[in-house]
Amino acid sequence: MDRPGQGPAGVAFLRTPNVTGQGTDINLEDVYNRERDSLGTLIASDPIRFVHRFKAPLDREVAGFLASQFAYGRVDGIVRFLDALFAATGPHPHAFVVQGDFSAIEPLYYRLHKGRDLVALFGVLRRIYDEHGGIGRLLATGFDNDVREALWSARERLFGTNGSLDFFFPKRTPAGPMKRWSLYLRWMVRKDAIDFGIWDFMDKRDLVVPLDTHIYAIGRCLGWTKRQTQGWNAARDITAALKAHCPEDPLKYDFLLCHRVGITGGCTGKRRPVCKEKCIVYAL
Image (cartoon, rainbow, N blue to C red; front, side, top):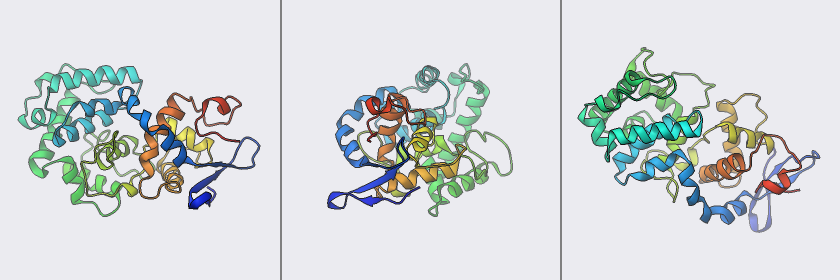
């Protein structure tokens, strides 16, 4: 990744390769400021929409965990499942968790996760609230500026060496991108019209981008990472590139890039002639 240069009045630009192999200056902050007021309209097409249904912080914490952890697969499938799940939990997901009767979710399933898996997951969530007071408090207990270590430590406290629920509470796998947890952390740590800012044990400058296929393709296209696999190091590369534009809040660009460049813009990871017309960050 090339080092950032300086634009007018000290504005940071990131040097990225263009289709001719020369260079393109992209002022991502200008793009963000131009598009910021319209981003709220995209909430309805993102899993975060389910978290926006709730007002109480504990309800949002539970809803955020569930919406982020099941944010994989086809969008229509995710939406159908989460609609059914939150209909079953009722207007207060936190109260549903702590009361302990999970019979309402037993008939549900999503892809490989059957009703018994959901009941087991909700049982662990109840234990987290009973013993630690919340998911954020559990992570904060083991947090020392390394979110992966905090998560792995939380898993060890919850399960020991047991292999239970490792899809939701990942084992110590240094190469894993941790996309769904990084997404959850963005929702809970950042605060703006999109994200909620419930947790204060972690600074938003230390968040790592949720590396889905869209962000990975964008990162490859713009030269932010040269990694051949969609892993943690690629996520760190792309986060470092975003920090060149906004060191104090690099993930404020994540929602914009994912939706407007990835989903709507159809970024494939390679520069094409059509990019000049469709991509909001493309410049010759």
